[in-house]
Length: 118
Image (cartoon, rainbow, N blue to C red):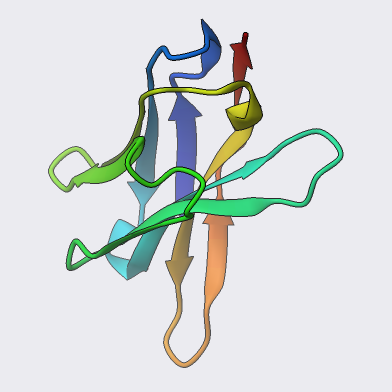
């Protein structure tokens, strides 16, 4: 079992920055990939960024060049540095962690709200 707790959300103006944190506890050695998802009101959830244990990262085109995912192994924490925020980035951001051998399942955090106003 892995517990994920997000923090760092808030309300900012267009162009400002935020850093989200996802603190993991429990059997984190079972995790293969860490990621951030977001869900805006009335929209489907979408993957924002992922990072593997090897450090390989992926980003949705919507955030490339503005967001950076990183991981502090010693602190069991994953970060999402968000710069150049836009109103369309407004959403609840969720941290997740993929695990499993021969299958993939996910742990999820409770989410943190990010609101960007123009």
